[in-house]
Image (cartoon, rainbow, N blue to C red; front, side):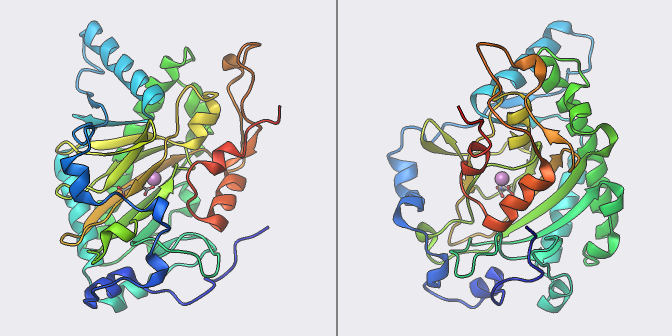
Length: 363
Ligand code: OGA
Ligand code: NI
């Protein structure tokens, strides 16, 4: 099984549709009624959970001398990863100005003339570059977003020529952003390992040590004339290890599934939203949860987010840590390499949690 060389039908940029000034969206973007977001007015006015939010964790102090504070931070990360699969981190060590610069260069890219963006048009073979769909099913219902996908690691996949060249200096900013986020993920991997009662390097080693993968998907959600009929990104769980999302600083859109409700995330200033991906759910034998999430769009503001994915090396079979498999809690998943898993997802597009569920061991 291989990914096809090209898309099954011509690509339409959602940004072009949006800028065309339509009053209604094409049928291809209309979701079945059960998948549509609740109209936003009722979400604000009648939903008692509308001010619920994912936990916010202050990481300053994780490396300080105050042992009690350190333990409390470690504990908060553990609880959030089990309960929610999602949390926000503030004072995480990545300079706030770098977050602002990264958002700025990507805004500059998406607002560049179409010819500049089209020069980086992607294909389903590698997904690198400027794209407007996930999955290759002809006639599939599409999401209301465009994106840009690129690799930082492994170094053999890092190719500046596949990164945008507009605005000026964007490659340096993107590169620096990637380096900082790799470091932050390394720190979080240690905390997650310790919380499982494992050696601090356990998860990193299980991911392939130095040979991990790291990539970025920048999501651009243009304004949408009928936001109640569509989604910016359909419900999915992230296939990789861990995701650090830099959300738009002004516009909400990310929703996380919790007890069968959709909770709209309210980002704290300069926070990253951290979420556990399918591979850490597998390694932790489902102690940590890879939770479904989706993105809603709105009619008066575009939204930009940077999703950084920290992934295992592609060819190592991922399976529950032996230390976490007991007679009472047998291994919940069969081994699969991340390369195989990702191919499976790239062919089918986002589909809730059905993909990680399908790895479950037959009983
Ligand atoms: C993703 C994702 C959320 C967002 O890219 O996997 O879930 O807010 N993005 O854009
Ligand atoms: Ni996601």
